[in-house]
Image (cartoon, rainbow, N blue to C red; front, side, top):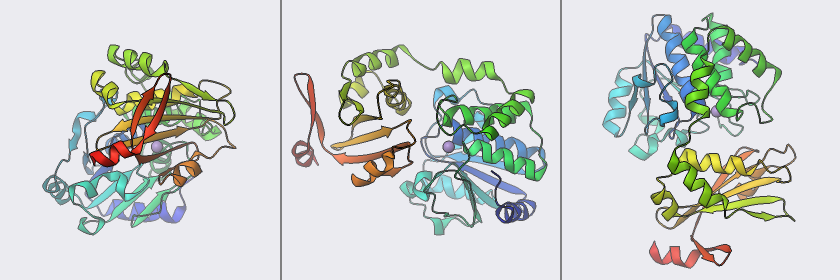
Length: 336
Ligand SMILES: [Mn+2]
């Protein structure tokens, strides 16, 4: 599991000619994208490179403890993005499976508007290779693991700051070493990161123990609606717009719920349906089984994703009838 020498050498070539580097993670930043982004920032700064980090959207509270999180600039408009690009000779996107995931299109920035070479560092299975350079390794546990390989290739040593950021990325993407993407290389790297001073205590106190009272109440409500389809082996539940408003639910709350549904050993897959604005329902699918490919189901419904984590969006509203919930799509069409 090493980046192809050609891609790594090309990256090295550009890095040596870029005194100023911009690093972007995907929108709705998670522990892997932010961990990889900040680790790269610390590593390149130590080499004397000027580094700028910019993201669309805010950083969730449970990730704000990461060393360097305060240096990430929030890009809200096209002008913000243009100012950001003007500070860079090279732009890296980390953990971003396709260009759309950067969120740049939403503020009117298309790939042709990026004035500097664009590098794509990622592990998503369906990454189309949208960069000038694509360091895409499908069998890496996380983008954090790829960053560690890049650092090894460039001779950048692991500091406590870098190690905390990378270890958080691994925790995030393996669901704390519970998913099937834990490889010998993942555990070897974890060992190196702890030896290099990764702050496990901070990860445990901020990232792993991240629930609020509101989150607990939301979970109580949503878990009381769990439905098991024994024939399909699918465990599912629903979150309404009212729930999201009443409990101030965050995307991480919803992510936590769908992963928790997979705690049932008989579950082949978990499905969370959550209402969104403008009469849409988002479906999040997760499986822990190697012989189940939830991205196939998501694609049938116009979505996509990984084999083990995928999603889709369909028009409709969630309507309750006694114990049962169903999707009413004419309501949504009337509202749209
Ligand atoms: Mn990732």
